[in-house]
Amino acid sequence: MTYNNENIFARIIKGEADCVKILENDYILSFMDVMPQTPGHTLVIPKYGTENIFDLPEEYFIHLMDAKQKIAKAIKKAYAPTGVMIMQLNGKEAGQTVFHLHFHIIPRKEGLNYKFHSSEIADFKDLRREAEKIKKWL
Image (cartoon, rainbow, N blue to C red):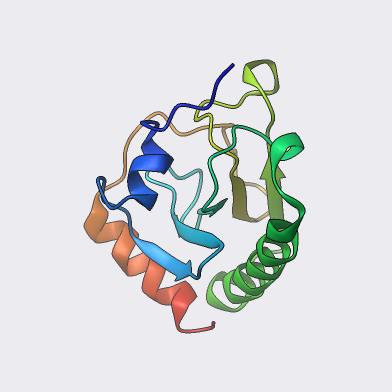
C-alpha cells in the first residue's frame, strides 16, 4: 500500500483538519482521539508520512518514545488510572484503520469494558476539557 497524503492524520499535520493538541514539536504531534475508548485517550504520530513502524526513519524513534513517556506520565497524574495502555497497530489485519503510523495512549481501570475503537465521534468541547487535564501535567 502506498502512503496516502490525504489521510486524516496527514491532513491534521498540514493544518487542513482540526484536532485538540496535547504536544507538538518538529518530529511529533500528539492530540486527543476523536473516538476515545475512555477520557484521556491520546494519540501520538510522527510528522513523517508512513503507514507503519517499519518504514519510519530512525531519527523519529527517540522523539516518539519521549513524547509517549511524557504523555503517559501526564495521563497517570490527570486520571489516576490503575494502568496505561500504549498500543500501536500495523496493517488492516492488526486493526489499523488510519494508515499513518500512530500510537494510542489509553488510561485503563479495572472493571471498565473497553472497546478496540469507539463507534462515536466525541464532542470537541469534551476533548478540550480532557486535553487540559493532561496538558497541565506536561
